[in-house]
Image (cartoon, rainbow, N blue to C red; front, top):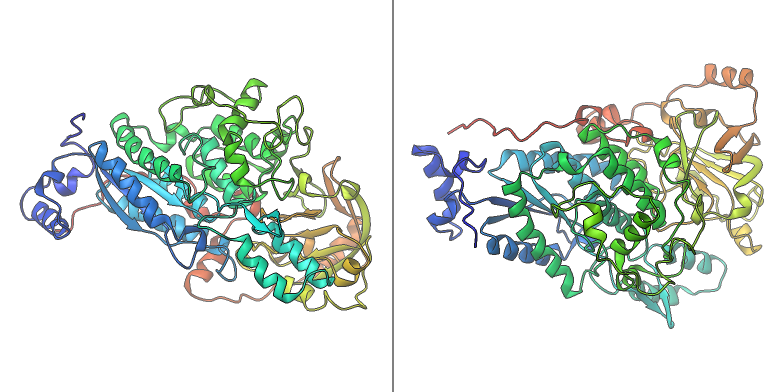
Length: 578
């Protein structure tokens, strides 16, 4: 084993200190049974774990942390595990997105304040991955992401069922009488039958793949199921690798380059990934000084076909994706077609091209070849502009109905998701298949936190009539497990006076996805008159974190981060108070 001792390490400002200070730091650590020899200058590796029973996707991460520790010890480092908050979308109200920035702040400050030379980030549910990456990027110490892995495929009545995606399907079946309450209760257990995050290509799986595409996660590690022994092998390998990264001074600032972000955007298109990647990648880019805006997510994907046939856009699930070759196989296809940069460095110390060279695609149904893709180029995320969204809006084309990608219909406006849900089952609700449902005040400031509420279920009367989709427009987000013709992230949001606040029932809404426009067919003079009449909603929060959030959150086109957190603050050792 290589001698890893170095008295100039950051951690030695604590453990190598002379006199009273050093004695305090070392002696209190020794109450955990550490011998004096572990403070000899070897790399101290923090293991940041978001394990929590309140975040079911992350509940198993304590076991993953033990595997990381083994790897750190193997490589001659000192592993020290510490907890972070967990932002679980499945339980948190009003939305886990409200707390992504808080978690990023916590991760950043915990890393900076403690005697760490490097860190392994253990995440699971979808907001924990970007939050940890954002926090670690702002400190810029060597860091490796280890996501917790997807659940095993759901199984119900001999068919694969996907977490999240089948929630929407089962709800429709329940409303139309195709499924009973008892059958629904039974199906719940069939859908979530192991530890892990969503096994569809929802936001959790998307962000795991995005972390790998950025170069912040070991190749292939995004797809191993949470309960597969190779998930633990991956974690142990990450523990070993981060010790080497400390020696090499391989920091996030060297990995998270403009080319790395371009790769991640194209990979997201190829896997049929979540629209939430737009928000999270934009926020992360802001932490490392990379300029990234909504139009990048449109321009960079126009030539990229969807290669991965996974729910909600396709048929299969993450377990199948893993066995078909996982993300390295996808990246190898893209690289072979000239659609990825091969040169960016990754946490392995090798380039993207070197990492993907041994990749093998197994079969052609789950991961399709570039010359016979699951969906053709131009079916990824589209960014729209127009008088309804001057700063942008997004739509996931692969999850939308082709016949609705160009549509004109009258608006039916709801001032909150709750207002819609209150009448959605009313048989006399004034809507038909041409109606455009507009839901506002669901943005970063308005809700607050920009919840995943945009893909509201269709009105019961339309479902019973056999209608399966309609255009919905909202300033909120949609779960990556969701589907439908839903325009999301309308910016500026209604709560800050965006044009969505001016829409009235009956106004013609014109959607033209091929033309990349979303507009309200109302003349400018009338809109100007309505703006004069508009008054901003009253402030609901006067103290606490939610007040801080509403005062400082940026709009969706800026990643919904806090303005005061943009850029990095480095890893300078804090002053010694002892």
